[in-house]
Length: 180
Image (cartoon, rainbow, N blue to C red; front, side, top):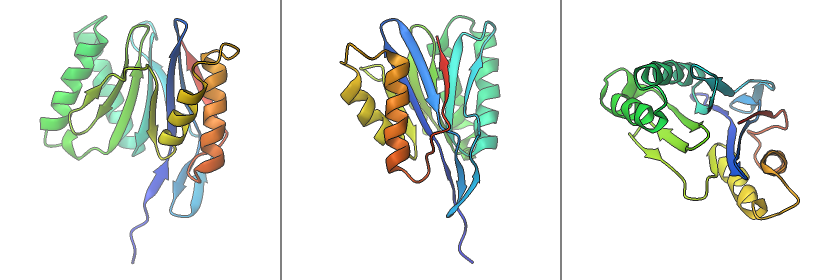
């Protein structure tokens, strides 16, 4: 019997004009079947809800990592970069965490970061992040639109997520947006 693969998610972060927007679609697919169309993959965390997090990959794994990140933020208040680096170290070296399959986009007012299970903490030079099945489609659309003066960060995110949903069968138009 062929193993069914869970596929889901387009997460997009955009930083423009001192505003940070994190958007995520709502689709969760198992093989050729849409299992859920309104999943919430974007959240606020931190003591003051001033950190945005979006996750792609296995949901239970992502929630485990989100809880670990919250613990790191409590240990290093106001230091998102340090908390993310500490989480990435644990994620890579801990026997249990190493098996978790997820990626995260994490943003606060100053930083936009991609965290992966290989120990990567990447800060994109243009402030735009795209992860998940449709992440590259949304990322390309956002990069094409970022210079438009008539579009703010949220408008760019919405349009880019629509482009991804039109191309990627694992992405839908039920978009959740959080903004700082």
